[in-house]
Length: 116
Picture (tube, rainbow, N blue to C red):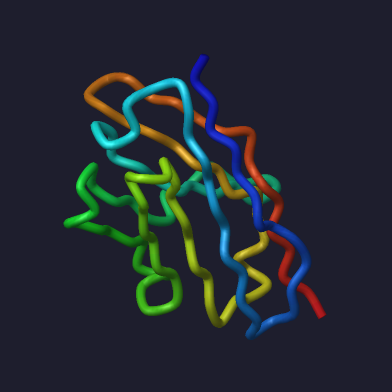
């Protein structure tokens, strides 16, 4: 049974930091690229960051460059998203995803709220 379980969300003040984690099981983690997406109320889901199966390549949405860092640990089947300098506009549900070809797996999401 495939599972992606996100954690680390919560309420943070503007300018603060959070680290999201996603633990995967039920598939060969090291064969999959991993992504973080987010969806804010009333908006479409958008890609935050992605990382290749080996971790050697990463990509970020323009608004996250320099603030967010995606990383993975294939020995622990974990992908993380370090988020710094958070802004109210970063408030959203953050989803972890795994992709290999046409196969996609998704977690249930974790809420991130940036507010004073």
